[in-house]
Structures are given as structure tokens and as C-alpha cells.
Length: 358
Image (spheres, helix red, strand yellow):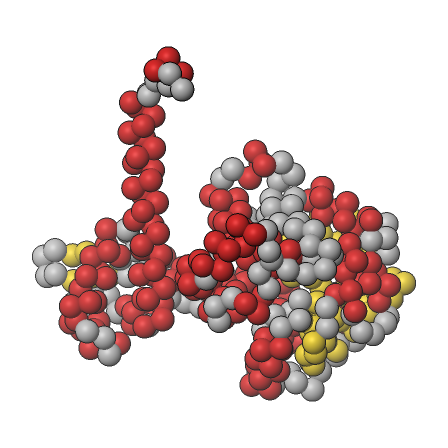
């Protein structure tokens, strides 16, 4: 390369990008501190407490004041808490509390940061995967991934599943109210299965997953929440889905994780009743890369790089669909699996919801 081959530097663009990278640097380390605040209960202790000193917060959470003081400085610099210099206190506004302290809030994101923390812990595994092309099975991740994903998705399911998503499916709510047979494939720790069981007492539900610790945790949750008489959880991949004649089969944020999504969807179609329905919930995405170059797409591409795509590559076929597949690609998968009717039922800023019928 000669001097004439070197592209000239646009100083304005350089400075703007340095500024962006510095913002990301602050966000990256602050994500760790957010996870620490979540795990230690610092946000919950601040929620509704009004202005509070670092010493009081440390005392209420059993933490060391010097660490808490520095943590609060980071939180104030990032706009997560408000600093009152007159009396050296910090306050968590109610809007921020909905995001970081209230696990029942539909916009709670503590689980997302727990999920991301698990990915940092697994960075050596991902380095090897990048170099070799090998997959990374769900069971190979840091344990915080499982609890983080549960806490990330459950608030959205609780807010939208029963009240908004299911009513958009043709005739499904009436079936659930009168007594339907439902399979939740890729149920994880069982949040979606249990939410439906709590809402529809005449229906029976079974959740399937390939991860035994998740199934064990789901069973305990069903017992704790009093729905175990109409809910059961078992180990099974989608391609080996047990049972027949399901009125509803649900795939919550899991089709793109499958090594063989066509094969999994084909078995689901075979297991449905003739008038049964597949509810497919997937991350929000456009059909082209340029449609997803936004904050939500950035987060989903990131999570897909270290969770979804490696998980698919670790399974048979290893299609590697990815979390940003988009409606057109998802519809093509369902058509290839034999579904004749596929439509977008509804959407949220984070999800697309498809209805498919045999």
C-alpha cells in the first residue's frame, strides 16, 4: 500500500465515531453494574424510597458503603438515578424503577442484563466457536443465561400473551375457555406455559424442552403456583414432539434456535388437530439487514451471535436461522414444513407474532 492508497480521514466523522465508542464503553461497563445492582437488590431498595444516601442504601441491602457510593456515581452519570447535590442523596425515579426494579413491569430489563452477563462469562467458548465454526449447546452456557432469559421474556409474556396475542388467533380463546389441549415447545423454565394455565383453567398444558434443569425448574414453578394439576413438563425436541391432536402449539422465541426448524415445524403440524393452530412468537425483525440497523436489531443481532446461532449450529442440520430471520424467511420455513396458512397476527416493538394453520 502506498501513501496515495490511504483514504483521507474525515475529522468530523472520526470525532463523532469516537464519541459513539465512548458511549458504548460507558454502556458496556454500566451493564455490569446494572447486573450487580439487580443481584444485590439495590434498585428494589431505592424504588419508592425517595432521596437516599449511599450509607442508608448500603445498610438496607447489606452492602459496603464505599462500593455503593461509587456505584451510585455511575448510575447518576448514566441517568438511571438522580443525584441531589444539596444533601448528597440519590433517587430512583418511578419510570426508571419500572425498568430496573419492578419485575412485574412489562418493560423490566433486569433479566436482559443478566443474560448479557452470562455471555461475558462464556467469552472463551465463543472465541473457540468463531475460530472453529462449532456450535455451542444451550447446556454449555453460564447458568445465569437460563434465569436471565426467564426474567427477560416473562414480563412481556405476562403483559401481552393472554390479553393481546391469543385473542388475535382465530377461535383459539374460545377453545381455551372451553377446554383445549396445548403444547408449549421450547418452554424453558415454563413461564409462558404457566401464564396460559393460570388464565384458562379448563385447558391442559404440556411444556417441552431439551434442557433437563429448565424442565426441573418449570415443574417446581408449577407446583409453587398451584397449576401442576393441569400442567406438566417433559423433555422432548420439537422433531420428536409427543402426542397428537393439539388444539394449540406455541413456539415462544424458539423456532430460530432450532438446528432443523423445518423438521421441528413439520412435526408440530403433524401433531396439531385438523383445525389446530400454531402460535409463533419471534424477535421483531425486517426481512433485510438494512431493515434491522436500529437499536432493537443491534441487541438482537448481538444476542443471536452468542446464543441463538451457536445453539442452532450445535444441533442436527444446524441451519443457523438467527434471531433476525424476519417474517418472510419464517413464513418460508413454515410453508416448507407443510403449513398452508400463515399470517402476521400482531406485533410489539420487540416481537412479531405469526399464526399458522395446517
